[in-house]
Image (cartoon, rainbow, N blue to C red; front, side, top):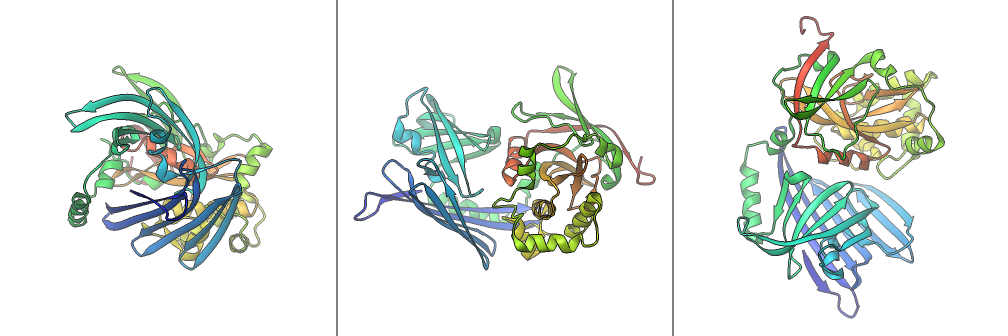
Length: 444
């Protein structure tokens, strides 16, 4: 990060740059992110330019905050979107999060709360911080520093900031993600080594292996499994097709999930009507889910042409997305982008399905959790639930209406942001298959 005054203005320019090289599922992905924020002396946002590049795909954001209005222009391929949001007071860019407590006082016990524009979700979120202690760690070669805890998107990050205001060390995701200050030369050397590595670190870190394998997982009708390591901050979600009980095993607390697929599982979702608030949330349009866009609406209408029964319309949309969107490890920022490119991973399938379903009046929410992949184990996955006289779980990646019993739901919500809560459990869970049944002949 670089901070410099702007000539002839009482403003400061903050620039930062990040590069990553990821080996995942046998594929190499190169990511780079650049940002430029123009801020006042109190760190409040004036304007910004953000650019994110994944392989040969670029997303750029330009915006300004003026007279209580945040205006954003997004460039993604040949697509241009504009957004405007009215805000009650000043906002801050995400790049100043570790500068804010330095400017306002690194006093033990100090607490701060303020709104931040997050370019990753392109919305304003609340950040809360507390200055916890002043400490040092000779083992980590950490000079005397202030420990600052920051909570954003329900994620906790601990940062150690020295007396010069420099961030030396950070821990996130419960200590499973660690970053530290190093020289530019050292960082470039690491990227070069990473590009030559054949080890799939992301997969190794996120995969949850089980002692007992599950054959034919897409045909699984019943699964009883225990999960250990669930954080207390994550709510335990029941239904559809999912029941959870707490159990003590050898002095350890585990959560036993019982999952059922098909009509029996769908009934567990209940048939209580949605209230007005839920209808607004689960039929709404957003930056990531462009429910009201003409292309989304026309595509949905064509996919369900001639069908009137809600469940038939759900089945038609799931089938359409499953057949039309090619499985590919590619970043997708919105449903409309998926519609244009017709490829992406589970999240891409889910965003597009959700937008299409909402466009024809079917309340739909996003779901994140675990799914079993044969020969590997449980991987993190995204799917959806649509409300048709009760919630029905659907998976447009696997073309399932009434998902198989290896789908373990951990989070749910109206927007893509709700899936970010899964970051609290990645790398922490242990699973033990207690019982399973499958309709696959000869598998049991």
